[in-house]
Image (cartoon, rainbow, N blue to C red; front, side):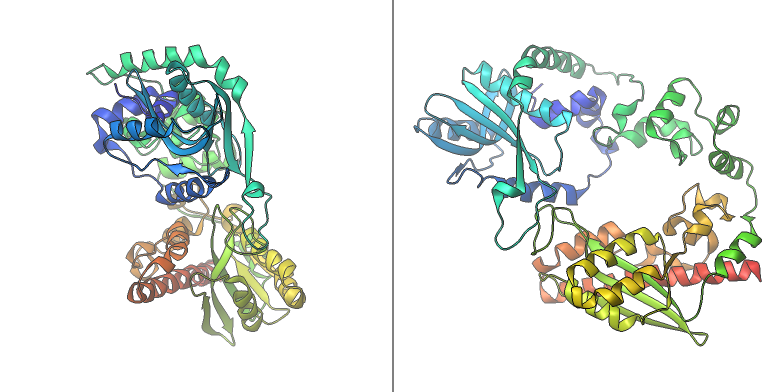
Amino acid sequence: MYLSKSKYCNAVQCKKMLWLNEYKPEEKESLNESVLENGTQVGELAKNLFGFHIDVSFNENLKQMIEDTKSLLYLDKVVITEASFEYDNNFCSVDILKKNKSDFEIYEVKSSTEVKDIYKEDISYQYYILNNLGYNVTKASIVYINSQYERNGELNLKELFNIEDVTEYVKEKLENIKLNIKEINNYMNQKREPDELLGIHCVKPYNCPFFKYCTKGLGNQNVFTLKGINNNKKFELYNKGIFEYEELLKIKISDKIKQQIEFELYDEEDYIDKTKIKEFLDKLTYPLYFLDFETFQMSIPLYDKTRPYMQIPFQYSLHYIINDELKHKEFLSEPDIDPRRKLAESLVKDIPKDVCVLAYNMAFEKMVIKELAILYEDLSDHLMNIYKNIKDLMIPFKDRYYYSKNMHGIYSIKYVLPALYPNDPSLDYKNLDLVHNGSEAMNMFANMCNLDKDKQKELKNSLLKYCELDTYAMVKIFYKLKEVTS
Protein backbone atom coordinates (compact mmCIF):
# COMPACT_ATOMS: atom_id res chain seq x y z
CA MET A 1 0.00 0.00 0.00
CA TYR A 2 1.14 3.56 -0.73
CA LEU A 3 1.35 5.08 2.74
CA SER A 4 1.28 8.76 3.69
CA LYS A 5 2.07 10.05 7.17
CA SER A 6 -1.64 10.63 7.89
CA LYS A 7 -2.50 7.07 6.83
CA TYR A 8 0.36 5.74 8.90
CA CYS A 9 -0.88 7.62 11.99
CA ASN A 10 -4.43 6.35 11.39
CA ALA A 11 -3.10 2.81 11.35
CA VAL A 12 -1.07 3.38 14.53
CA GLN A 13 -4.32 4.33 16.25
CA CYS A 14 -6.30 1.48 14.65
CA LYS A 15 -5.43 -0.49 11.54
CA LYS A 16 -9.10 -1.20 10.90
CA MET A 17 -9.72 2.54 10.65
CA LEU A 18 -7.35 2.62 7.68
CA TRP A 19 -8.90 -0.55 6.20
CA LEU A 20 -12.42 0.89 6.39
CA ASN A 21 -11.24 4.16 4.91
CA GLU A 22 -9.90 2.22 1.95
CA TYR A 23 -12.68 -0.33 1.42
CA LYS A 24 -15.78 1.25 3.00
CA PRO A 25 -15.30 5.04 2.86
CA GLU A 26 -19.06 5.62 2.64
CA GLU A 27 -19.36 4.62 6.32
CA LYS A 28 -17.11 7.46 7.46
CA GLU A 29 -18.52 10.38 9.47
CA SER A 30 -17.50 13.88 8.44
CA LEU A 31 -14.50 15.55 10.06
CA ASN A 32 -14.56 18.75 12.10
CA GLU A 33 -13.62 21.30 9.44
CA SER A 34 -12.79 24.03 11.93
CA VAL A 35 -10.03 21.85 13.38
CA LEU A 36 -8.60 21.31 9.92
CA GLU A 37 -8.78 25.02 9.13
CA ASN A 38 -7.03 25.93 12.39
CA GLY A 39 -4.29 23.45 11.55
CA THR A 40 -3.81 24.97 8.10
CA GLN A 41 -3.54 28.53 9.47
CA VAL A 42 -1.01 27.49 12.10
CA GLY A 43 1.02 25.55 9.55
CA GLU A 44 1.21 28.51 7.19
CA LEU A 45 2.30 30.86 9.96
CA ALA A 46 4.92 28.48 11.36
CA LYS A 47 6.64 28.35 7.97
CA ASN A 48 8.05 31.79 8.80
CA LEU A 49 9.76 30.63 12.02
CA PHE A 50 13.16 30.36 10.38
CA GLY A 51 12.88 33.36 8.11
CA PHE A 52 13.08 33.03 4.33
CA HIS A 53 11.81 29.71 3.05
CA ILE A 54 10.90 28.06 -0.23
CA ASP A 55 7.58 26.25 -0.43
CA VAL A 56 7.02 23.09 -2.43
CA SER A 57 3.61 23.66 -3.98
CA PHE A 58 1.02 20.94 -3.53
CA ASN A 59 0.49 18.79 -6.59
CA GLU A 60 -1.86 15.83 -6.93
CA ASN A 61 1.03 14.24 -8.74
CA LEU A 62 3.16 13.48 -5.69
CA LYS A 63 6.09 12.52 -7.91
CA GLN A 64 6.23 16.14 -9.04
CA MET A 65 6.47 17.34 -5.42
CA ILE A 66 9.33 14.91 -4.86
CA GLU A 67 11.15 16.17 -7.96
CA ASP A 68 10.58 19.80 -6.94
CA THR A 69 12.10 19.00 -3.55
CA LYS A 70 15.17 17.35 -5.08
CA SER A 71 15.84 20.42 -7.19
CA LEU A 72 15.98 22.56 -4.03
CA LEU A 73 18.27 20.24 -2.10
CA TYR A 74 21.19 21.25 -4.29
CA LEU A 75 21.24 24.61 -2.52
CA ASP A 76 23.84 24.99 0.23
CA LYS A 77 21.64 26.22 3.08
CA VAL A 78 17.90 26.44 2.69
CA VAL A 79 14.60 26.15 4.55
CA ILE A 80 12.06 24.16 2.54
CA THR A 81 8.41 23.85 3.55
CA GLU A 82 6.38 20.83 2.43
CA ALA A 83 9.56 19.10 1.25
CA SER A 84 8.38 15.74 -0.11
CA PHE A 85 10.04 12.33 -0.08
CA GLU A 86 9.28 8.73 -0.93
CA TYR A 87 10.90 5.50 0.18
CA ASP A 88 9.57 2.05 -0.67
CA ASN A 89 5.97 3.27 -1.23
CA ASN A 90 6.06 5.43 1.90
CA PHE A 91 5.48 9.13 1.27
CA CYS A 92 5.76 12.18 3.49
CA SER A 93 5.79 15.94 3.23
CA VAL A 94 7.89 17.57 5.95
CA ASP A 95 6.27 20.71 7.32
CA ILE A 96 9.63 22.46 7.72
CA LEU A 97 12.94 21.02 6.46
CA LYS A 98 16.04 23.00 7.43
CA LYS A 99 19.11 22.09 5.41
CA ASN A 100 22.36 23.08 7.04
CA LYS A 101 25.78 22.64 5.52
CA SER A 102 25.94 18.86 5.82
CA ASP A 103 22.88 17.82 7.83
CA PHE A 104 19.12 18.32 8.08
CA GLU A 105 16.57 19.30 10.70
CA ILE A 106 12.89 18.37 10.43
CA TYR A 107 9.99 20.12 12.16
CA GLU A 108 6.41 18.88 12.42
CA VAL A 109 3.90 21.68 13.09
CA LYS A 110 0.77 21.09 15.18
CA SER A 111 -2.06 23.43 16.19
CA SER A 112 -2.28 21.77 19.61
CA THR A 113 -1.04 23.31 22.87
CA GLU A 114 0.74 20.11 23.91
CA VAL A 115 2.87 17.37 22.40
CA LYS A 116 0.89 14.14 22.02
CA ASP A 117 2.32 10.68 21.46
CA ILE A 118 0.72 10.49 18.01
CA TYR A 119 2.71 13.57 16.95
CA LYS A 120 5.90 11.72 17.84
CA GLU A 121 4.73 8.78 15.75
CA ASP A 122 4.13 11.19 12.88
CA ILE A 123 7.61 12.68 12.90
CA SER A 124 9.19 9.28 13.54
CA TYR A 125 7.64 8.06 10.29
CA GLN A 126 9.16 11.07 8.48
CA TYR A 127 12.55 10.41 10.05
CA TYR A 128 12.35 6.77 8.95
CA ILE A 129 11.83 7.79 5.31
CA LEU A 130 14.58 10.42 5.22
CA ASN A 131 17.02 8.19 7.09
CA ASN A 132 16.49 5.36 4.61
CA LEU A 133 17.03 7.77 1.74
CA GLY A 134 20.45 8.58 3.19
CA TYR A 135 19.76 12.06 4.54
CA ASN A 136 21.65 12.92 7.73
CA VAL A 137 18.83 14.17 9.99
CA THR A 138 20.43 15.43 13.19
CA LYS A 139 17.39 17.05 14.74
CA ALA A 140 13.66 16.25 14.83
CA SER A 141 11.26 18.58 16.63
CA ILE A 142 7.58 19.21 17.23
CA VAL A 143 6.37 22.80 16.81
CA TYR A 144 3.21 23.54 18.79
CA ILE A 145 1.20 26.43 20.23
CA ASN A 146 2.26 28.17 23.45
CA SER A 147 -1.06 28.57 25.25
CA GLN A 148 0.43 31.18 27.62
CA TYR A 149 1.40 33.59 24.86
CA GLU A 150 -0.53 36.86 24.98
CA ARG A 151 -0.53 39.05 21.94
CA ASN A 152 0.50 42.68 22.30
CA GLY A 153 1.11 44.36 18.97
CA GLU A 154 2.61 42.32 16.11
CA LEU A 155 2.67 38.56 16.45
CA ASN A 156 5.89 37.24 17.97
CA LEU A 157 6.37 33.84 16.35
CA LYS A 158 9.19 32.85 18.69
CA GLU A 159 6.82 33.32 21.65
CA LEU A 160 3.68 31.99 19.94
CA PHE A 161 5.31 28.64 19.22
CA ASN A 162 7.03 26.12 21.46
CA ILE A 163 9.56 23.73 19.93
CA GLU A 164 10.22 20.36 21.56
CA ASP A 165 13.25 18.33 20.48
CA VAL A 166 12.28 14.65 20.05
CA THR A 167 15.41 13.49 18.20
CA GLU A 168 16.33 10.71 20.60
CA TYR A 169 12.77 9.41 20.56
CA VAL A 170 12.61 9.13 16.75
CA LYS A 171 16.00 7.43 16.56
CA GLU A 172 14.87 4.78 19.04
CA LYS A 173 11.65 4.23 17.05
CA LEU A 174 13.43 3.49 13.76
CA GLU A 175 13.15 -0.31 13.85
CA ASN A 176 9.64 -0.13 15.29
CA ILE A 177 8.49 2.01 12.36
CA LYS A 178 9.81 -0.57 9.93
CA LEU A 179 7.87 -3.36 11.66
CA ASN A 180 4.71 -1.23 11.83
CA ILE A 181 4.81 -0.53 8.09
CA LYS A 182 5.18 -4.24 7.33
CA GLU A 183 2.21 -5.09 9.59
CA ILE A 184 0.08 -2.36 8.05
CA ASN A 185 0.75 -3.57 4.51
CA ASN A 186 -0.09 -7.16 5.44
CA TYR A 187 -3.27 -6.00 7.18
CA MET A 188 -4.40 -3.90 4.24
CA ASN A 189 -4.04 -6.85 1.86
CA GLN A 190 -7.04 -8.52 3.52
CA LYS A 191 -10.09 -8.47 1.26
CA ARG A 192 -12.48 -9.63 3.97
CA GLU A 193 -13.36 -7.11 6.67
CA PRO A 194 -11.13 -7.82 9.69
CA ASP A 195 -12.48 -8.15 13.23
CA GLU A 196 -11.08 -5.81 15.86
CA LEU A 197 -11.98 -5.41 19.49
CA LEU A 198 -13.34 -2.03 20.50
CA GLY A 199 -11.08 -0.19 22.91
CA ILE A 200 -9.82 3.18 24.09
CA HIS A 201 -8.08 3.52 20.72
CA CYS A 202 -11.56 4.15 19.25
CA VAL A 203 -11.61 7.59 20.88
CA LYS A 204 -7.95 8.32 21.60
CA PRO A 205 -5.97 10.17 20.38
CA TYR A 206 -8.85 11.06 18.03
CA ASN A 207 -12.49 10.06 17.78
CA CYS A 208 -12.68 7.41 15.10
CA PRO A 209 -14.94 8.43 12.18
CA PHE A 210 -16.06 4.80 11.89
CA PHE A 211 -17.13 4.34 15.52
CA LYS A 212 -20.86 4.39 14.69
CA TYR A 213 -20.27 1.79 12.00
CA CYS A 214 -18.30 -0.49 14.34
CA THR A 215 -21.00 -0.25 17.05
CA LYS A 216 -24.08 -0.37 14.81
CA GLY A 217 -25.00 -3.87 16.00
CA LEU A 218 -25.33 -2.78 19.63
CA GLY A 219 -28.69 -1.01 19.31
CA ASN A 220 -29.67 2.30 20.88
CA GLN A 221 -29.41 1.13 24.50
CA ASN A 222 -25.83 0.19 25.27
CA VAL A 223 -22.93 1.25 27.46
CA PHE A 224 -21.69 3.77 24.87
CA THR A 225 -24.94 5.75 25.02
CA LEU A 226 -24.58 6.30 28.77
CA LYS A 227 -23.27 9.48 30.36
CA GLY A 228 -21.36 9.62 33.62
CA ILE A 229 -19.05 6.69 32.84
CA ASN A 230 -15.57 7.48 31.56
CA ASN A 231 -14.43 5.95 28.30
CA ASN A 232 -11.92 3.57 29.89
CA LYS A 233 -14.70 2.04 32.01
CA LYS A 234 -17.07 1.80 29.04
CA PHE A 235 -14.60 -0.19 26.97
CA GLU A 236 -13.65 -2.33 29.96
CA LEU A 237 -17.31 -3.28 30.49
CA TYR A 238 -17.88 -3.84 26.78
CA ASN A 239 -14.93 -6.20 26.47
CA LYS A 240 -16.26 -8.15 29.48
CA GLY A 241 -19.54 -8.61 27.61
CA ILE A 242 -21.40 -6.17 29.89
CA PHE A 243 -22.88 -3.58 27.56
CA GLU A 244 -26.64 -4.11 27.32
CA TYR A 245 -28.82 -2.14 29.75
CA GLU A 246 -30.17 -5.29 31.45
CA GLU A 247 -26.63 -6.51 32.15
CA LEU A 248 -25.49 -3.12 33.41
CA LEU A 249 -28.26 -3.10 36.03
CA LYS A 250 -26.75 -6.25 37.54
CA ILE A 251 -23.47 -4.56 38.44
CA LYS A 252 -22.62 -1.74 40.83
CA ILE A 253 -23.28 1.59 39.12
CA SER A 254 -24.06 5.12 40.32
CA ASP A 255 -27.63 6.14 41.09
CA LYS A 256 -27.71 8.61 38.18
CA ILE A 257 -26.59 6.01 35.65
CA LYS A 258 -29.05 3.51 37.07
CA GLN A 259 -31.79 6.12 36.74
CA GLN A 260 -30.97 6.74 33.09
CA ILE A 261 -30.99 3.03 32.29
CA GLU A 262 -34.25 2.32 34.12
CA PHE A 263 -36.09 5.32 32.67
CA GLU A 264 -35.19 4.37 29.10
CA LEU A 265 -35.51 0.62 29.53
CA TYR A 266 -38.87 0.70 31.28
CA ASP A 267 -40.24 3.86 29.63
CA GLU A 268 -40.80 5.55 32.99
CA GLU A 269 -42.67 8.82 33.50
CA ASP A 270 -40.83 12.06 34.31
CA TYR A 271 -39.38 12.36 37.80
CA ILE A 272 -40.17 15.73 39.40
CA ASP A 273 -39.05 16.77 42.87
CA LYS A 274 -41.40 19.71 43.42
CA THR A 275 -39.92 20.64 46.78
CA LYS A 276 -36.36 20.96 45.45
CA ILE A 277 -37.50 22.84 42.35
CA LYS A 278 -39.52 25.27 44.46
CA GLU A 279 -36.52 25.87 46.72
CA PHE A 280 -34.50 26.72 43.61
CA LEU A 281 -37.17 29.06 42.21
CA ASP A 282 -37.58 30.84 45.55
CA LYS A 283 -34.00 32.09 45.27
CA LEU A 284 -34.81 34.00 42.06
CA THR A 285 -36.06 37.57 42.08
CA TYR A 286 -37.68 39.89 39.55
CA PRO A 287 -36.85 41.54 37.25
CA LEU A 288 -35.27 38.35 35.93
CA TYR A 289 -32.67 38.37 33.14
CA PHE A 290 -31.75 35.38 30.95
CA LEU A 291 -28.26 35.68 29.44
CA ASP A 292 -26.38 33.64 26.84
CA PHE A 293 -23.03 34.41 25.15
CA GLU A 294 -21.63 33.11 21.90
CA THR A 295 -17.86 32.99 21.62
CA PHE A 296 -15.24 31.93 19.11
CA GLN A 297 -11.72 30.60 19.46
CA MET A 298 -8.67 31.02 17.26
CA SER A 299 -5.39 29.16 17.50
CA ILE A 300 -3.60 32.35 16.44
CA PRO A 301 -4.58 35.31 18.66
CA LEU A 302 -6.09 38.06 16.52
CA TYR A 303 -6.24 40.95 18.99
CA ASP A 304 -4.15 42.50 21.73
CA LYS A 305 -4.71 40.94 25.16
CA THR A 306 -5.79 37.61 23.69
CA ARG A 307 -4.22 34.16 23.96
CA PRO A 308 -4.42 31.10 21.70
CA TYR A 309 -7.80 29.35 21.95
CA MET A 310 -9.15 32.02 24.30
CA GLN A 311 -12.95 32.31 24.30
CA ILE A 312 -13.72 35.63 22.59
CA PRO A 313 -17.34 36.76 23.10
CA PHE A 314 -18.89 38.26 19.98
CA GLN A 315 -22.62 38.02 20.70
CA TYR A 316 -25.21 37.76 23.41
CA SER A 317 -28.95 37.39 23.73
CA LEU A 318 -30.87 38.75 26.69
CA HIS A 319 -34.48 37.98 27.49
CA TYR A 320 -35.87 39.54 30.63
CA ILE A 321 -39.13 39.51 32.57
CA ILE A 322 -40.19 42.81 34.07
CA ASN A 323 -43.71 43.53 35.37
CA ASP A 324 -44.79 40.12 34.02
CA GLU A 325 -43.81 41.18 30.50
CA LEU A 326 -41.19 39.31 28.47
CA LYS A 327 -38.74 41.54 26.58
CA HIS A 328 -35.62 40.94 24.52
CA LYS A 329 -32.30 42.67 23.76
CA GLU A 330 -29.30 41.47 21.82
CA PHE A 331 -25.80 42.28 20.61
CA LEU A 332 -23.83 40.99 17.62
CA SER A 333 -20.43 42.34 16.70
CA GLU A 334 -19.30 43.30 13.23
CA PRO A 335 -16.80 40.78 11.85
CA ASP A 336 -13.04 41.31 11.64
CA ILE A 337 -12.78 43.61 14.69
CA ASP A 338 -12.12 42.93 18.35
CA PRO A 339 -15.72 42.59 19.60
CA ARG A 340 -15.09 42.69 23.34
CA ARG A 341 -15.21 46.41 24.18
CA LYS A 342 -18.49 47.13 22.41
CA LEU A 343 -20.02 43.93 23.78
CA ALA A 344 -19.01 44.83 27.35
CA GLU A 345 -20.38 48.36 26.98
CA SER A 346 -23.64 47.02 25.60
CA LEU A 347 -23.91 44.46 28.39
CA VAL A 348 -23.61 46.99 31.21
CA LYS A 349 -26.17 49.17 29.44
CA ASP A 350 -28.64 46.29 29.05
CA ILE A 351 -28.32 44.66 32.49
CA PRO A 352 -28.83 46.97 35.50
CA LYS A 353 -26.91 46.43 38.71
CA ASP A 354 -28.29 44.18 41.45
CA VAL A 355 -30.74 42.22 39.29
CA CYS A 356 -31.04 38.44 39.18
CA VAL A 357 -29.43 36.96 36.07
CA LEU A 358 -29.97 33.39 34.91
CA ALA A 359 -27.54 31.49 32.70
CA TYR A 360 -27.56 27.87 31.62
CA ASN A 361 -24.23 26.47 32.82
CA MET A 362 -23.28 29.72 34.49
CA ALA A 363 -19.57 28.85 34.78
CA PHE A 364 -19.16 29.79 31.12
CA GLU A 365 -20.97 33.13 31.33
CA LYS A 366 -19.15 34.00 34.56
CA MET A 367 -15.79 33.23 32.96
CA VAL A 368 -16.56 35.53 30.01
CA ILE A 369 -17.75 38.37 32.27
CA LYS A 370 -14.76 38.09 34.62
CA GLU A 371 -12.29 38.28 31.73
CA LEU A 372 -14.09 41.37 30.41
CA ALA A 373 -13.96 42.93 33.88
CA ILE A 374 -10.20 42.33 34.09
CA LEU A 375 -9.71 43.79 30.62
CA TYR A 376 -11.82 46.94 31.07
CA GLU A 377 -11.21 48.54 34.45
CA ASP A 378 -13.76 51.33 33.87
CA LEU A 379 -16.51 48.73 33.40
CA SER A 380 -15.24 46.30 36.01
CA ASP A 381 -17.50 47.34 38.90
CA HIS A 382 -20.71 46.91 36.89
CA LEU A 383 -19.54 43.70 35.19
CA MET A 384 -18.59 42.10 38.50
CA ASN A 385 -21.97 43.11 39.92
CA ILE A 386 -23.59 41.13 37.10
CA TYR A 387 -21.12 38.30 37.80
CA LYS A 388 -22.03 37.96 41.47
CA ASN A 389 -25.78 37.96 40.74
CA ILE A 390 -25.76 35.10 38.19
CA LYS A 391 -27.61 31.91 39.07
CA ASP A 392 -27.59 28.63 37.15
CA LEU A 393 -30.78 27.36 35.49
CA MET A 394 -28.99 24.08 34.82
CA ILE A 395 -29.01 23.02 38.48
CA PRO A 396 -32.50 21.45 38.62
CA PHE A 397 -31.52 19.18 35.72
CA LYS A 398 -27.90 18.56 36.62
CA ASP A 399 -28.97 17.54 40.14
CA ARG A 400 -31.95 15.59 38.77
CA TYR A 401 -34.74 17.52 40.50
CA TYR A 402 -36.39 17.11 37.12
CA TYR A 403 -35.53 14.11 34.96
CA SER A 404 -37.03 12.71 31.78
CA LYS A 405 -36.05 9.61 29.85
CA ASN A 406 -35.71 11.83 26.78
CA MET A 407 -32.80 13.68 28.42
CA HIS A 408 -30.73 10.49 28.05
CA GLY A 409 -28.67 11.33 31.10
CA ILE A 410 -27.61 14.68 29.60
CA TYR A 411 -28.51 18.02 31.17
CA SER A 412 -27.44 20.35 28.37
CA ILE A 413 -30.12 22.71 27.13
CA LYS A 414 -30.18 20.96 23.73
CA TYR A 415 -31.49 17.81 25.45
CA VAL A 416 -33.55 19.36 28.24
CA LEU A 417 -35.59 21.67 26.00
CA PRO A 418 -37.04 18.99 23.65
CA ALA A 419 -37.63 16.72 26.65
CA LEU A 420 -39.81 19.41 28.24
CA TYR A 421 -41.44 20.60 24.98
CA PRO A 422 -41.36 17.61 22.62
CA ASN A 423 -43.89 18.88 20.08
CA ASP A 424 -43.07 22.56 19.67
CA PRO A 425 -41.45 23.32 16.28
CA SER A 426 -40.68 26.90 17.38
CA LEU A 427 -38.26 25.45 19.96
CA ASP A 428 -36.57 23.02 17.56
CA TYR A 429 -33.02 24.09 16.69
CA LYS A 430 -33.20 21.95 13.55
CA ASN A 431 -35.73 24.41 12.10
CA LEU A 432 -33.26 27.30 12.21
CA ASP A 433 -31.42 28.49 9.11
CA LEU A 434 -27.62 28.09 8.80
CA VAL A 435 -26.81 28.09 12.53
CA HIS A 436 -28.08 25.24 14.70
CA ASN A 437 -25.53 24.94 17.51
CA GLY A 438 -22.70 26.76 19.23
CA SER A 439 -19.96 25.18 17.10
CA GLU A 440 -21.62 26.38 13.92
CA ALA A 441 -22.07 29.85 15.40
CA MET A 442 -18.39 29.96 16.35
CA ASN A 443 -17.14 28.79 12.96
CA MET A 444 -19.45 30.96 10.90
CA PHE A 445 -18.69 34.15 12.78
CA ALA A 446 -14.93 33.47 12.60
CA ASN A 447 -15.19 33.20 8.80
CA MET A 448 -17.85 35.88 8.23
CA CYS A 449 -15.31 38.49 7.11
CA ASN A 450 -14.55 36.32 4.06
CA LEU A 451 -18.15 36.59 2.80
CA ASP A 452 -19.75 39.24 0.62
CA LYS A 453 -22.16 41.77 2.16
CA ASP A 454 -25.32 39.85 1.20
CA LYS A 455 -24.03 36.62 2.70
CA GLN A 456 -22.91 38.48 5.81
CA LYS A 457 -26.38 39.94 6.24
CA GLU A 458 -27.95 36.49 5.90
CA LEU A 459 -25.53 34.97 8.38
CA LYS A 460 -25.97 37.80 10.90
CA ASN A 461 -29.73 37.19 10.87
CA SER A 462 -29.17 33.46 11.43
CA LEU A 463 -26.76 34.11 14.30
CA LEU A 464 -29.25 36.45 15.96
CA LYS A 465 -32.09 33.93 15.61
CA TYR A 466 -29.94 31.13 17.01
CA CYS A 467 -28.74 33.06 20.07
CA GLU A 468 -32.24 34.42 20.68
CA LEU A 469 -33.57 30.86 20.77
CA ASP A 470 -30.98 29.97 23.40
CA THR A 471 -32.33 32.53 25.87
CA TYR A 472 -35.96 32.00 24.85
CA ALA A 473 -35.37 28.30 25.58
CA MET A 474 -34.23 29.30 29.06
CA VAL A 475 -37.41 31.32 29.55
CA LYS A 476 -39.53 28.35 28.50
CA ILE A 477 -37.61 26.05 30.83
CA PHE A 478 -38.14 28.53 33.67
CA TYR A 479 -41.90 28.63 32.87
CA LYS A 480 -42.02 24.81 32.91
CA LEU A 481 -40.38 24.70 36.33
CA LYS A 482 -42.96 27.18 37.62
CA GLU A 483 -45.77 25.18 36.00
CA VAL A 484 -44.82 21.85 37.61
CA THR A 485 -44.60 23.44 41.07
CA SER A 486 -47.76 25.52 40.92
